[in-house]
Image 1 (cartoon, rainbow, N blue to C red):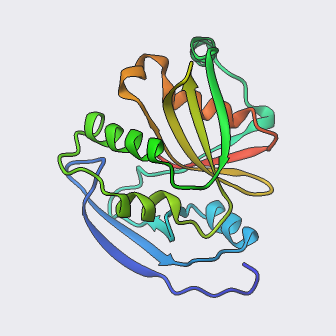
Image 2 (spheres, helix red, strand yellow):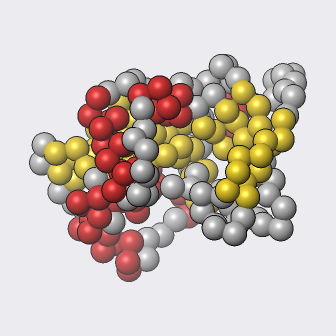
Length: 199
């Protein structure tokens, strides 16, 4: 990792957001700057990123959180995936540099409220710390149906891979299999592999 040393902390994050009967623990550290080769090495070891926090789940008696790695050169769509691609052929995707955008934020809020049934609205500070602050090169993918924003994805771009940070979609467009389409878009980028986080 370019000679950089980091001090890892174990965190107790309370109830697991995915499994009702589990608690959530991480090894993590925070940094405002991370060299690409260092980040690549951490991704290869199963670490992920949330804002300026780099973390690795270390939950006892549970190993369900496993990053998905796809070799793009050898990837072949199955029948269902091809159907998803065809269903989304009208969707336009735009690449943008990392930035705060009010439309992105409002879609994020709507996704959390309607899809994850979040009772307390997400505020701008929480959103900014989660998805806008980044120690690495991050891009935003915006998905449009006609002129309507229906999805937003945040990806970290590295020389040899792309890491998916998060993806949100308009729950009204769930029939388009939006989450799967986001991954298909990344698989068609000029890179050989991606390390995709969980949504």
